[in-house]
Length: 130
Image (cartoon, rainbow, N blue to C red; front, side, top):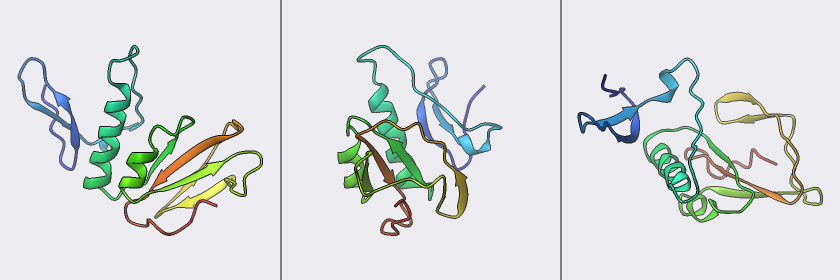
């Protein structure tokens, strides 16, 4: 079966038919996803490609927890904001935080001296993460 969802983004190519896989995860019962693979298999590339596709094609909020600052150049090149969070920083995440048009509950496992990168393509300078 081919996957060509209206409003979807590129996820790859069907091995059998050679057609593009265009999926809209918002249409699924649960749109969550994860990238799994061995070292060097392209996990980071795949995640960055999906982030770029979403940033260019949708108004979705994109939030990345990025302990190694690997995504910082991509976030900054898209006009996003990088917020450093640690036990000693002036930045904090509130238990309930409103991002964009939707209200989100945020559960955070605290890891000292880590970074969070946030990109919101429609509200870049809003400072809603404090």
